[in-house]
Image 1 (cartoon, one colour):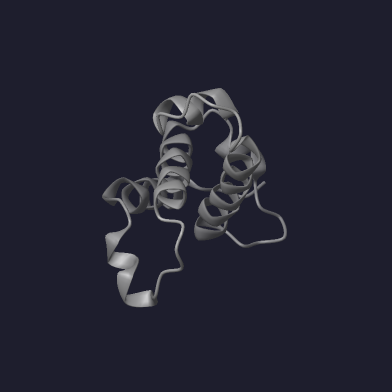
Image 2: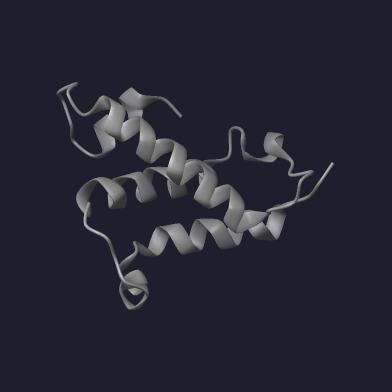
Length: 97
């Protein structure tokens, strides 16, 4: 997923937070992938060109960007619905090589 696409989604048209957004992209990507599989043999190709994966990453980056303060566990219910839905769909179709 490209930085420009994420920035469109979160309505950012400046570049002074690009490094921060890139960090959020890495964090979100790993969080979503780890939610599907933590295997050493994780099938990385499974996530390429997956609309469910891309949606989950975009929503989680957006959440990180808009909620920069630490959260407590009881606030996890405030995560966008689409993230959980996308992860469940990714888990359902996941396979290892």
